[in-house]
Length: 267
Image (cartoon, rainbow, N blue to C red; front, side, top):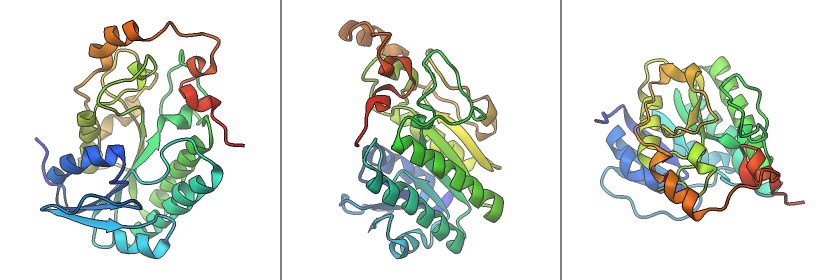
């Protein structure tokens, strides 16, 4: 059972896929859920506030953060893309968010980092929170920056952050790679809840997956967060193997954990 942990929580990226999945679930974590995105969102329901804002607009971000006690930050560019939109949303925008958190006294952030911070490790390797980042593109690079920015604001200003390296969160895994990276929406909510409620969070890196038998991520250094996944990609394994071809072991998308991201370029 989820208990109310904060009076008002800000959920950014609320118009995106994961934002929509968390919108109804996060209401159980707070008295008021403030929803924000650059794009239009569904109208506010009971216990909700809707604020349309661009992360690159520092003044709008400050107003968006004011009055909140915690932030679940899903906003920004969520796929590999050209440099300029990533710069504005994921780098300038994240700086604006942490500055607003500092000014308004927000002390806990759940930051949606990504498995693509580690995308150039091979699929036969296991990584943990101390393994050096190897981003697979500009998107992964921006998330590595975000983790470092979060550490700076913890060391200097005491803002605790969970950097959640989200794998692949969909209703079900789409391919063989996702048998390792998949996280159900309910497990995503369990992980966010754990990050919001653990007594001491500090600056923590935790991999966001369900309890999958195939896994490239070791969360032993995040035991203090208290996340216990309850779902697994294993129930989809036979169906995925039946409908997908045998992997080409010379394909970089099969060799590396980042999958197709390692082959995506915009220049």
